[in-house]
Image (cartoon, rainbow, N blue to C red):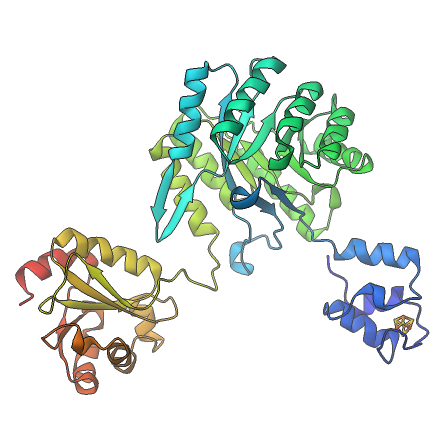
Length: 445
Ligand code: SF4
């Protein structure tokens, strides 16, 4: 938990010597609290005070990085219990498991399938983040051979799942540059796994059946020098795991309890695919840093990905599209022009309906600061003046030979004023986007 200016002041020398450039120690403490100064500016601070201040400035949940370059994954670093309090910063990474008992052909096919998973939703490209290689065979040789194939065919971040520290060390040698997550250290192999993770600078996952054991393991790992830790409170039931993850998040954020100040990994073990979706969505909301799934079926992944996208958007910054004139089909001088706002969900609701109509058309998107049509209208961000100014900026008169613009049916009330300020004829379109194909076919002339 961050210290207040007064808390920091208590740890300073209190000599008011001004060597830090501040007139008093209190003024310097206030600057430190506001992150406008650094501890090194006070030459007289004691080692104990420095240690205490550095410890208190550590984030309550560590930010852990895995993977490399464009495929890097960041988890943890969260600061709130509930998204609406501020925002969640680092979205839950989705990993798909691959086990080393698969034949070469089946293994390569699975890697290819994982690589090919790709969705487009509200303008964002979404793919799988990580591959979790599981040492199901218990053979070091098979594990390393499977790892070679993954490294040759995928650039994704990796989770190495084996309890054998020798196998883990050999695997780490092969892929240190990917900064794989080492999964896992338990009460039996902690020392060796810690040593391997330290040598190869890899995040270390700790696995235990209950929170008491996990707490003990985390404290021991800390004393062995492990700094990048991921917690695995092994999945048993949705109820138990939800309780575990909530306890971990509450203790780390509200009590600043350091042994639990790390992101969590959860392996979804439910064989019923729809229950696996429910489990995954629950852990995305509360509070997994990584979920590992066996399934690569679209009807499992799509709802999970949509849930993640919804939870990890900043509630203060709606997802937007660029305000401009969009073309659908091959519009010409006689094509209709519809107008809407730049809220991403609105755009991606309207756009497919225009496409589905088979009609070539323009869609004018105004800057409504990411609000939907009705909200923007109520907030005066979708007014006749704003629409008219956008029309002029885009030089709409030179785009078509008619002077007709179609507004959403929900804001029919804008039509009179918009006609006055723009000089264009305003047509009132359907209220719902689903009415667009029928409107363009039967009403537009
Ligand atoms: Fe106080 Fe240190 Fe600044 Fe001197 S240098 S005024 S002791 S904070």
